[in-house]
Amino acid sequence: MSKTLTILGGVAVAGVLAVGGWYASQHSEASLITAAQAQEATADKTVQTLPDVSLGQENAPVTIIEYSSFTCPHCADWHTEEYPTLKKDYIDTGKVKFIQREVYFDMFGIWAGLIAQCGGDPKYYAISDMLFNKQRDWIGDGKQQTISDNLHKIGLQAGLTNDQVTTCMNDEKRAEQLVATFQKNASADKIDATPTFIINGTKYSNMVWSDMKKIIDDDLAKAAQ
Image (cartoon, rainbow, N blue to C red; front, top):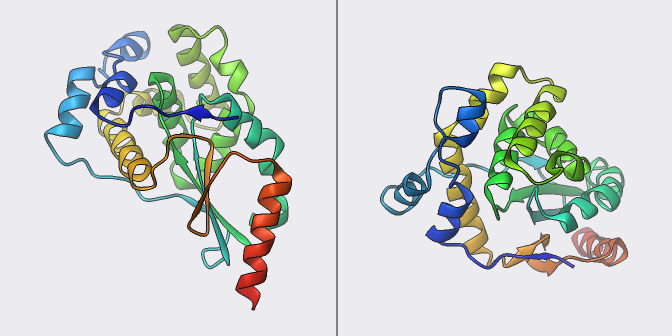
């Protein structure tokens, strides 16, 4: 099963970033982007999108792009149950280049995205793993205070400083870029649910590992011909 993405437009952006100064009021004097600012940022000006962060050999014969949300339970299940095998047998061996693209359903997803991005490219996948593996723990009771505190702790556990985490969680420009990147990529690839996989240009919905393995092996065989 997967989580369905129903809105990709400005309304979704407003919902994702409609946090006002809440996180900031709890953790610093800065102010995170408001709903109105989010709409203006994406509708009335051009926001720079961000490049993909890839894992594995750049020239690997198979490229897998995964669209996932840090707040999607099915994405967390895939990352805890299937992804370790993909990484060990295919990414680490140079057969697959892996790219994760974030999808945002809510403000908590964007907060998690800001934490994942906080250490830069070298730390991105390590922090991403923590967010998926500990999803139930950091979401907890689902309250804003609980989630913000737990995400802050994950940032510290990943080796970031307290100031780094606070700065990242209040980074208005980065929040705009994350959402603009999500909108551009998800719209171009017609993503309507998570997790969704694009394997060598072909889109697939969530699947069991045996099915994904067969697709990868078939593409590897074609590349070897």
